[in-house]
Image 1 (spheres, rainbow, N blue to C red):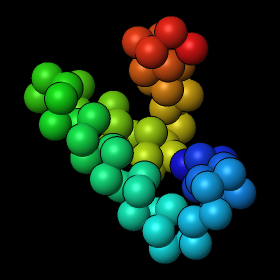
Image 2: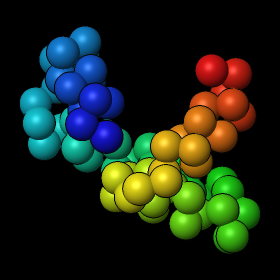
Image 3: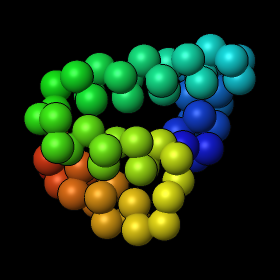
Image 4: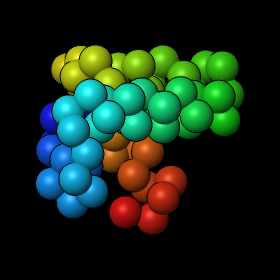
Length: 65
């Protein structure tokens, strides 16, 4: 999440707090749209848990990345 926060700060000129708030808002939105069983994947990614990289790649695949 640090990489995303840094990009928000650099590219959009947000301060640290605003970037963190934006990330939390987007994560909450995404979690609300996922089935109940898949919401833990977002929590794992946002907490930087080990093994979350595979989950992150799966999410990126959903968006054609």
